[in-house]
Length: 134
Image (tube, rainbow, N blue to C red; front, side):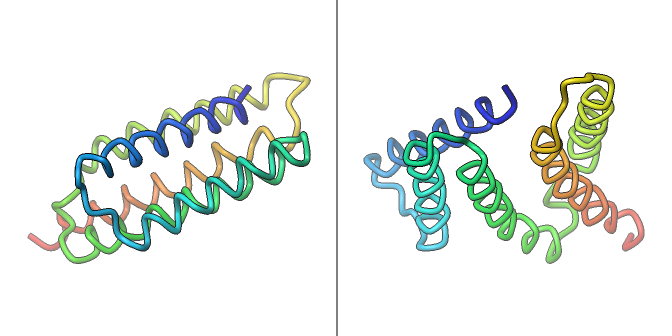
């Protein structure tokens, strides 16, 4: 279920980008590359009839998508609200804890929440720097 919902999230993002592109929104090369990686992941999923490698590729695209946000918050820690990222991090931690309680949980089930927890926690730490800068 986690892999399926992650795929739907990536597809929704792709559709959003495509729709916005028709609205004459300038999509940068970096964003197009991320979209292409996600499309390749979707293609792998369909070709191999398993979500494993497509999902991992999509997580790579998800991680790359954080690069501009990291750059922004490194330049200006106030650009991102710490509490929101903290709430996401806590919810992801709870998600991981809930997975450990399910006996049928497989290792692949942990990959998405762990990747998400890494990025969201990093945003907490980076955005908290503004509290020390003042």
